[in-house]
Length: 117
Length: 135
Image (tube, rainbow over all chains, first blue to last red; front, side, top):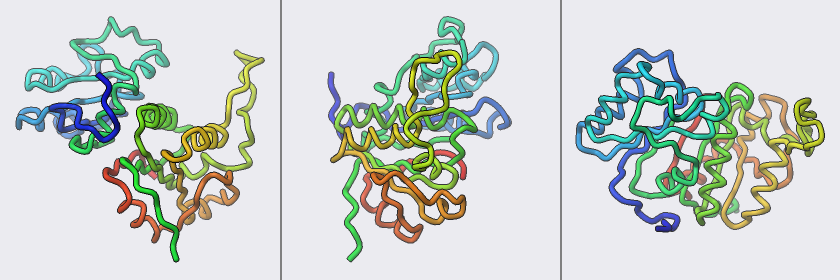
């Protein structure tokens, strides 16, 4: 299905984009914010780009499992994985490995709130 | 009379030094994807991101020793190409203050430099604003 620019894409309400993999204590950063929003019942996508793709490796971020348990989704930028030589099969799942063609409709959707860290 | 800012679906505020991370390529990939599906996008470059569109960068990056015969476009050339490919959808604005503060005064002609006080008009012309990076 082709989503036109500005058209509502569905149920997603928050697109939270994390670009860093460390430096923020657990339960204090954007990943935690994603968990909170998901637990409040808001359809939430956490997109990991750049260094943050490392958070999707096993045992790196317990909060990703909490996010999924609360109904949120974890997306990982395939380009960033490839640049870092990370095998998508090695990620702790389930995650959705995406490219920007999947992200664009959410950013263009007037209903989706986007926060980038 | 001040120039009218064309309305867009999204205003991306891009800040931060281009070589500190791969933020620049992440954002440009997203912009390309939005433009290709018909989105209208304006980008306000602030802080060190104003250096992306300097004319002094020339057309190509320094030669890649691992790929000697391929010419890679400079960020200025890449932005210019995107602006010319999507003339009614994509607009690149640079913060004049930040640019002057960094001595990057000569930008490619397709970029519009604006004073910080003019930013309110850009934000009013966008349905959504996303702030990316740190100055």
